[in-house]
Length: 301
Image 1 (cartoon, one colour):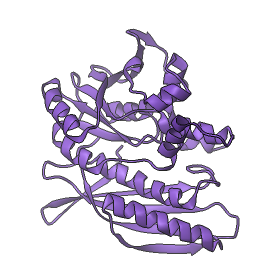
Image 2 (cartoon, one colour):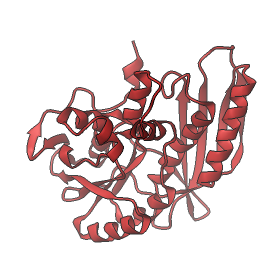
Image 3 (cartoon, helix red, strand yellow):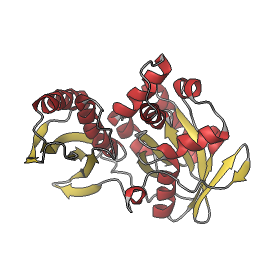
């Protein structure tokens, strides 16, 4: 029912999260090892950002697969990512796996919640507005490009691939908006599925406006903004943006935070009485896509 756990210790609230990434499921076997390390760190930092927490350290679970070059490049990427996010490596464990076996990599991140507390998915109420930070769909479009093959890449295509390989959650942004929100989550599995999770946890309905969903210039250049393109972006996942619900009277304060950080917040919907998720496009209700985002059941037989 939430992105992370909280634990009160000595008058402070720790935020604890654990994420795993598996070769062939969460990253491609041909992704550079340094980028795999970056992504492992970033997905955990994104969970902390959704709680307004700043990192205090991480624990790593690492698979050794008899490939010293890959391991060395991973370590370089790990150092770069942990330095960027300000998260020291506290320890962890390594295990050996057969050469050629898919790697499973895990990380536990420990953060400190702000004095105002860690927002959950469960606080949204009818009348709140729904906002998302940054743009949606870039990582999914980047993965689609890599899956489609081809070597020559335009500047826009390179930007989309970078969004997939090196997500950039913003921890300070999460901390600064935490006091303003009633509920917050990171967009990891897809904008629609994560909005639906807020609705379920909060016991209200969420109405999303697909035409308001922010798309980057790179996404528009490579894919476009048709209804089908917007459905793709809203369900692709791997964005690691912040999805939040905010009472209307705090919208101006939210705008001030956005301006200070240079990160746009876009209103993409509203919380309304009822249950579940509804989808609008150009003011007209449309059917939800059969797949709202990534679920582990997608890969099960």
